[in-house]
Amino acid sequence: YHVISDDLTNLEITKAKEEEIRKFREFQVFEEVQDIGQTAITCRWVITSKGDKVHKARCVARGFQEVEVPQSDAPTVNKISKRLMFAIAVCNKWEIKALDITSAFLQADKIDREIYVQPPKDIRRRGILWKLNKPLYGLGDSARKWYFTLRKVLSETGCVVSQLDNSVSNYYDDKNQLAGIVVTHVDDLLYAGNAKFYKEVMRKITTCFKISKMNSKDFSYLGWSIKQQGDAITVDQREYCEKIQPVSMDKSNKDPERPLNSGEKGHYQEALGKLLWISSQTRPDLSFDTMELSTYTSSAKVKHMDILNKVVKKVKFGPREMKFNRMNLEKDKIKVVFYSDASLGNLPNKTDSGRGYLVFLSDGHQASLIAWSSNKIKRVVHSVYGAETLGCVDGMSAAIYIRQLLSEMLFNDARKKVIPI
Image (cartoon, rainbow, N blue to C red; front, side, top):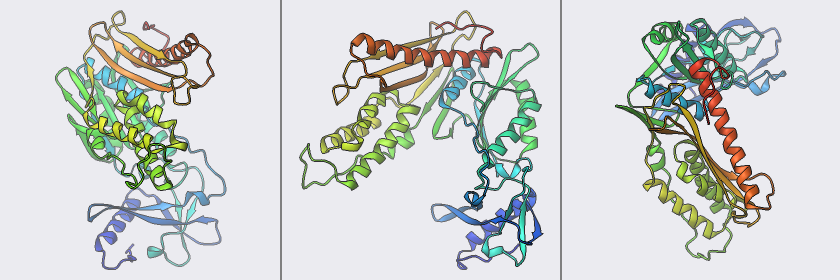
C-alpha cells in the first residue's frame, strides 16, 4: 500500500500511516476480499503527535457501526493490587519492572466472528474490503480479546489468575511459594519476581509478543513515578501535581457569595477532577478536602473556588511520595490494620455525615498504606454512634478485601491461611 496523505506536505503523517499498514501486514490483521455486498463498517486515521513531530498513526474502526454489540469488558489492574504488589516485592527484595507490548491488539488471537471493514479512503481500492483476522482498534471487544490472549500465555507458564482481581497473575514455585507477580493494564505489564519467575514466565512473554520498551529502577507506570532504593519503594505523582494550577476568576466581582458563572464552574470541575484523581492514587492527605469540595459542584460560589485554590497550593507542599517499607511477611507476623472515623452532620449542608478510613499492612515494626477513603455516609444517621458504626463497617469491608487478596497472592488460596485484622 502507498498512502495518499490528505496533507501532501506532511511526509511524517504519510510515513506513520505506511508504518501502521506494515504492522497490519506483519501481524496478518486482515485479508483482502471482493466487495459483493457484505455489511461493512468504516474506519478512519487517528494521528497523535508529541511536540511538533508525529508520534504514530492508527487506523481505527468505527466499532459503533456493528449491528450486534459484542461483550466488551476487560479487567485492568486496580490501585490496591498495585500497592500490595509493591509491598510484597520490597519484602522479597524483588525488583519492580514494566514493559509495553507493541500494537497489542494486533498481536491478539484471531477473532471468532466475521467483520468486514472499508479501508481508509487514502488507500482504498475499488471493489476491495478487508476481512479482519485480528481485533482492530475501535472494535468494542478488542481489549477483551487481547486480555484473554495474554491470559492464555500466562496460564501456559503456570501463572494463576487471581479470583479477586483478574488483572493479577501469580506464579508459584514447586513448593507452592509465591515466586512472582504480573499485573496488567491492557498492553502495560508490571511485574516482579525471582530468577525462576523470569526464566519461566517473562521469557515466555517476551518470546510470544513483540515488546516496544522495558523499564526498571526508576520509571513511570500509569501516571505513577516509581523509584526503588535500598529497603523501600517510593511512588509519587510530582510531575502531574506540578501541572495543576490555581483557577482564576472574574476580578470585577469577588463577592464570596456570588455563584460561579458557567465558565468558572467548568474550570472548578476540571481542577476538582484532577485533585480527585491524585487523592485516590497517591495523596490520601487530600481525600477529605476533595470530598468536601465535591459537595459544592452544582452550586459552587466564589468562596468555594477560594477553598479549591488553597487545596491546589497544598498539593505542591504536602507529602511528596508514598513509601513501601520492607516487612516480615511470615503468616504469624503480618497483619492488616485499619483506622476509621466519622462525624455527625459535618458536611456543608449540616445534615449529611462524612466518614473515612485508612488500611495498612504491618508486621508490628514497619507499615505500608494500602487503601484509604473519605466519603459521605450513604445512609441517614441520627447519632455519632451510628456514624462511627457505619464508618467502621466500610473500613472493615476494605480491610477484609485486602486480607483476602493478600492471602490469595501469598498462599495461593484466600481461605488457606487467615491473616489477622
